Each structure stands twice: as C-alpha cells, then as structure tokens.
Image (tube, rainbow, N blue to C red; front, side):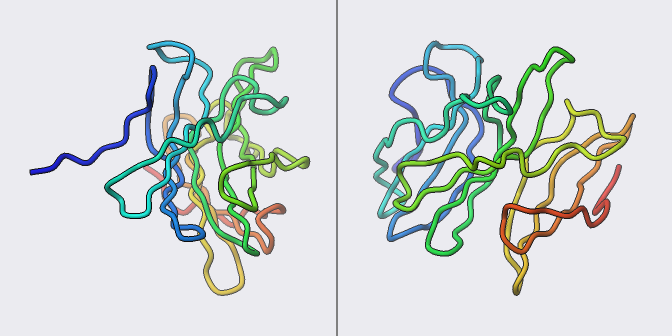
Length: 180
C-alpha cells in the first residue's frame, strides 16, 4: 500500500490550511517554521499537485512580516473569488500587551505569489473576547455572500463566531454560532 503524505524539505511543520483546487492544481498550505526543527514564528508553506499523489514544493506563501502578523501567520483557509486565490489567516502579533490575534487576508492572481491586503486586519476580536483567543478562520461562499466562522473564547466558554461579507474584505458580525 502506498503512503501519501506531504512533508517539507526542512524543519518543522504543523497543521494543514487552505486546501483548495485552483487553476488546475490542488493547493495545500501548512504552518511551518522554516529556520529550525522547533516551533517558532509561523509561516505558511505551500505545495501543489495535479493528482493528489505527487506534490511539488512551492516555498513559503506567507511570511510574518506586517504589524498584525509579525509574530506569526496562524491557521486559516482559502477561497477563490474573481479569479484570484484568497487566503484568510490569523495574524498574531505581540504589541506590548501580550499576543493579539486578528483575521487577515492575502491574495494571488497566479496561486503562487501572494500579496497581503493593505487593509489588514479585516476582523479584530469582538468586545468581550480576549485578543489572544480569536483564531482559525474558515471561509466559504453561499449564494451572494461570504461567511466565516472563527474560534474564540469568553471566559471558560469556547465559541464559534459567525461573520458575513459581500467582498471578503469588509466583514460584519452575525452571531455566536455555537458555544460550549
């Protein structure tokens, strides 16, 4: 039996993100620290495949480089819109008050080279949610609107918060989708 898996050429990797079929290729992103065999400032590694068996390394898709993601580009998802590939990810930054997590956007016209949206972050933690417990956006489209669910924590309760958008860049809070 053949074992099919993705492994970066060097160092440390974590959870997969943004699995999508775009422009004739399967794209898989994953959290990684490309500078050593340990956890560090998260980047997004990127591999592509035509057949889900043979994977080709594309290098780093997201680097922690902006004010809102300088401490790491954490988990997120991918979606196609207007023939572009959009990545929605959790930007993490230590801004002197501890780590703050916000939801950010990057996009690509070729699926390989990504540019971060100048208006990041597109969503900040809502009132009552500590900024260090607001992460892992999953975005999808239904009819004419985009929806995003994001993990959060209020006190001892975990929450899935629901947002909606017409353009992936401007979001409005809808409600708590689930809580436990």
